[in-house]
Length: 169
Image (cartoon, rainbow, N blue to C red; front, side, top):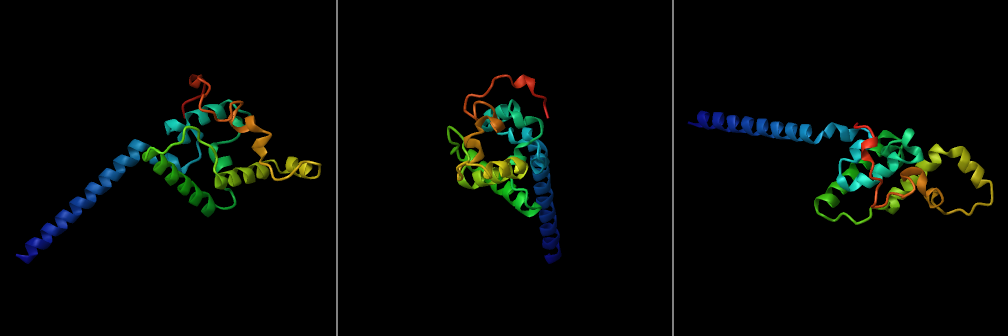
């Protein structure tokens, strides 16, 4: 009798594990989960609330050579990069999933520090020239260069309406 219970328990456990693997595999396939480990800006635009940011970035000066991750994630090392990618992703899932998405999405202090560091990282020569001049310090790059990353509208809630122009990625 005990041998029968062990077989039943093992079969039930195996069926449970198989069902869990199938469910997670389906979820990963349907949501294109592996794409979130990459850097394509189109992946960031999978959430409809990011449409205007993606649209504006597509029409901005940096579009030709940057992805969202180039500005919005730290690049000191892979641990920091993927930790922050996970932190931001889970924050976004929580905010969007609980219906707490703000009307206008703006950078928080933590994300602003990352973006500022990346502006300086990519434009080091220009920043050095500015720092040698009479420029007042303590401002963020986008205070003067608002249209550089997200176009003239600065990631407003009223995006350009020509999404047919950008390629499907």
